[in-house]
Length: 414
Image (tube, rainbow, N blue to C red):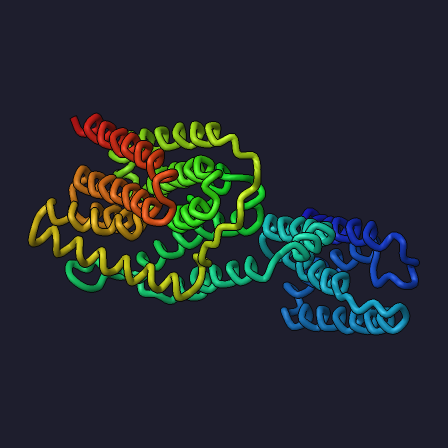
């Protein structure tokens, strides 16, 4: 018990040191609590926690209410005297009391960890304020929407199968939606923060996380308006494709690691060929200027998440019936059609279906087929928007990339 009381005292001392350093320029008469006071509050919580085991939990509640009343009185006096209406120290003192009681009556490791976390949070005031000041409305909006679709929606969905062969699991499907939105969120924020200032390569990398198709369309429009930077834009598109190939492997591995062995060699070869092409294109361009901002839709928007979820359900059903009616050829056809739109839904569908009997070679071949079609459709988009100056080098690079994937696939399954 002595060790537990010592921990309660130590928690108060730790927080008190941080508060004392933060308010060292204030006189003792203005400060609500300093090092000694916080240390005593922590010990007070420990003592009352110990007494609560003897006299009943009611006395611990009364003690906390008494401390809260004292803190409130001190806060009113301080706010009236110097006009400072911040309540950080007051809240910290009540937390220290509670952690002191927890140290005596509960998990010591939890109490110690919480005490360190409180001290670290208090000490990070300057950094947190700077971060909030730099946070834009778009970024905050995206983060809140990501929390809505993950923390609010995901836990309430049933984790059981519905539909034919119970292939539709709402929880798993929405978890896939959350994963894609989370990865895209990283790229979206990177594009918003530093994208146009770092040139084609890093903009392409961030765009590959957010949406390689959206980046390709954006770069194609820039190529039409500014033909002089065409090669730099081709390099950026190649960089986004490189990230897209590797991203598919990562996503699939999270849901079905057994597919990685079939995907790894083809995808790494495709990514390597695309990366080499990106470097050559960027070096050939000699472009040093920054690029304009690329517009990417918020991937965490609830409407976008629902659309992705619906698309995923449709593809899951199409794959199920295509396999039942047409066999493997039907799956490949659905994969190719899906690649015209997006590679994520078919990749996730194959990962899910291979858990329910679909052969690994069929699943991996379907994913690579979708990726290949997606690579080609981007060339078509660029040709329609930007014209020959961009589409010629991108076409040659895409043929090399798809050939590398085909060689990797043959190598894997022969």
